[in-house]
Image (tube, rainbow, N blue to C red; front, side, top):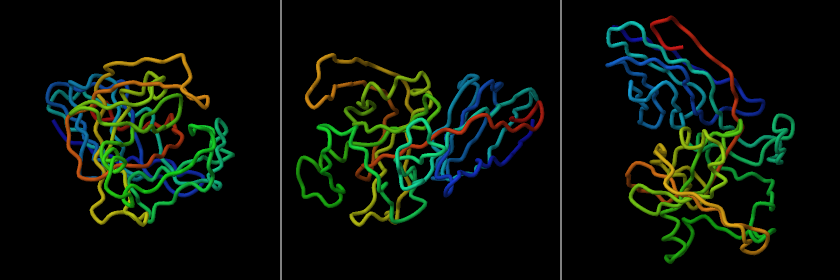
Length: 279
């Protein structure tokens, strides 16, 4: 038996710094008693054992560096290759949405889900194409809302982070049961959405847009798809309903949720140590 530890550092983005990472291990061999530990930087640690199988994703990891530990129970034959990772970044090139050409055109997002920087800055560029009805943009920080239905609904509204089609993406989602969330069906088009996905109710600034003093968002791993479907009839303004339901672990939240952020995934970086450690 033994313990191996290695520090993984994400490649620096072209602008700014890495705000968070989601790591993907493929081809892992964890024998009885072996553990792979990935601290998330928010007080939580992802622990993977033989039950995780050969392919698994972490929840979001704070920042761009993490010390990963492999604990060998004695067989000396375990391994856990880190084959790819997704990276969240800050605003680039004034937030202009470059779609597929994100490397040269920027991105309409601020992926600072752990609020490493404060105050949180909304992207200055606004793409109205995803708003229903088109062109509408009327919202306020939920911390500024008076008591009422919108404030109540906000407490059950959170953010889903997942990886699919070569990108780290986000969707809004609503808690509709002790361990159920409701989100748009297009959020799960990629087969990797559920294995890589995590949900939080904690992503929220204070009323002035600053990081709250006790801010430490907790992410909950998705477990399974319970129901999904698409409707053919438009609901007005060219929009369509796209409901889907995912299962998450049971949890409670102290903070009102809001906000979203996403950024592209950076792939193909692998680190190795030996046949008996993680790679």
